[in-house]
Length: 453
Image (tube, rainbow, N blue to C red; front, side):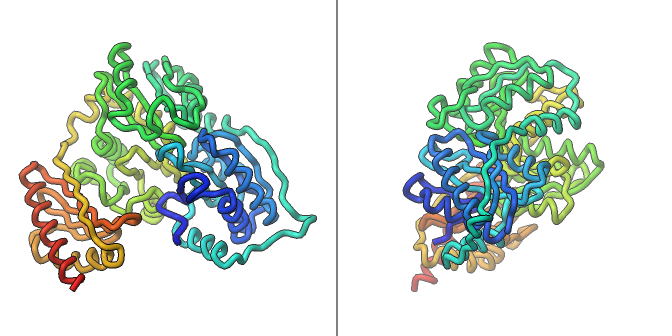
């Protein structure tokens, strides 16, 4: 069974993710990296300390010393891994997933999350139990460190805000509960914080910041006449925004608006997003002479592509934005400060900033398909779709099959966890989106029937 997904190991605590597995991941990481120094952190989940202790025991057994940061956001762990010259960084988190889940995500010495190659190597070590155990004289040591101030100093050195923005924050009881309010006060913002306390059950709201879960935040922003509302997920690598009118800002539109502003500032350049992002990215970025490159879904793939293409910026339409001039981990706090800076520079409110971004019609459907054949269906589907949609302008197979047209696009992917083929369609109009969806569904069913025979 594959352990790693697109964002580390995830599982229900004591079922899919046990202390035994955590210890094995720690020992396997020590075995492969030969690390002398590992930074370790966690989010606020009730299972965090339990899993951290198990993970650390594995690191120590492999001869790696653990420098424990306690509860900090994932991007802070990633940044400090590079800044403190650690060999590896590991965060215990399941990000936006419900509290019964937890996870383990590993970062390289430069603060970039482990990609598929290194993840596969760790899985092989665990599967074969080919661990390297240190001599008793060489087991690692444990240190408790508090270095979050270095992250704050980095932001303040590189970003200057000139306005006293009225900001309502909602850390959602997650890892940003203390650091986010502190940082915005350092930038001399007028800050009110909701749910700014540690609660590993995420009792105040869902750990994933969505339009529905942020209705209380939207109400407070509206009633207090604040400039913006900002919310984070469980580990702080995602940010979501509410404008000055108390309206939730669509993830795709604010991503496209910010990406376009970066390209405009630089006079061109590459930005990276995934295959599921709206085509408003191309419409806005290309208007300023930029180019959009699309990757597989997952911030690891976005980060790798940013490095390969020397891109200016990258992000996914879930609020996970990467700013390579700082580091290569999605960073909710950094993204929200950077967004305020752009609003200042353009002298616009958040609603004005996204007002010019087109909003298209999106449809999603899941078709049942046997696990043994779902990937074959998608593979065959590529050439079949090209024939049916002969006017397509772009074709990609980096993650499923994606065809782009003048007035929309379609993405077909095999689910990684369920016996399903997932279809996502976007069109300039609902009519166009429905036409693309209906044709695609018919072809998927046809191909599945042929393969089944």
